[in-house]
Length: 358
Image 1 (cartoon, rainbow, N blue to C red):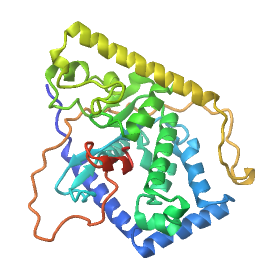
Image 2: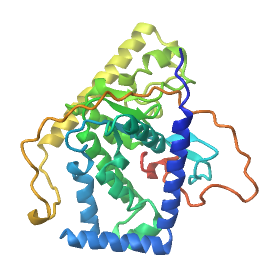
Image 3: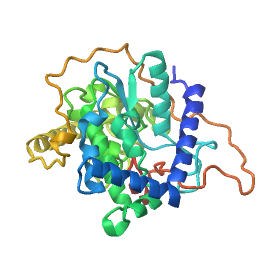
Image 4: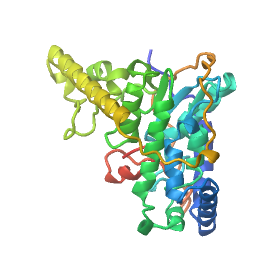
């Protein structure tokens, strides 16, 4: 039996979250809104005795405590990348109505938590992720209010902030995790930071990485069956033949079955070796953490008590996309006119600037 479409209640809630966030981003991108954010960040930075807003934000992105689950809970952590077109979603930079998988993940987590309290979370619902999100660093007016490109407040810097806290979030994950994406694009934070960290995280590991969506339906049957497993999709890439670990989904079935099976195994083994080496290097590298004075950073209680287990959280397996009925827009009418932070489509270079994609 094929997976069911995304439930309608998830769709409705995700659209609500997306449009509410688009409106908040629009307000942040105004002169008044951006200056208010800049003043708030400067005040918070000064109060915490950091020498600059940049230092303050960097510390936030590296603070594991800020993205950890509440004490005594073990929620399923959700990760996301890209999204799907939807006529009722906010307008992205390409003037397309586009629904981030972020909001689908948040809708899923909210419904899980209504059934089993504190059983699911996303990065943006943790304390650290929420605080970073409320800075709206992807909005040009906010970066300008903070000092602009001359002071290093660039779009690329904003993306680095999100890449950093995403990796920290993956470091803090425990147990099964769910990835809201069909595949991980080579320019995505999911591919470059989150999946490698989850893979080598001793509390997660490859066997606990689950994709919420099945492999792309346009893939041939053999590709979906053999390359579309959770473990393989968490390691190889299918979008850039010029980069390592590429598998061509279309050509895959034309190869000798034994040879292609061996090739996939070799690619996965190479990915595992590279990620293990990267994790080892990170573990032995000198730390250059920027922290507030001890008076501002209370010591963490030790030792930690074992986390209590929540009721099992259902890992969704949905058919990506819910085939929404197209909506004919009136002349001059659209969703929010300010480009949202929705990650653009994978085949365009501008994708490198999006929060969940490189």
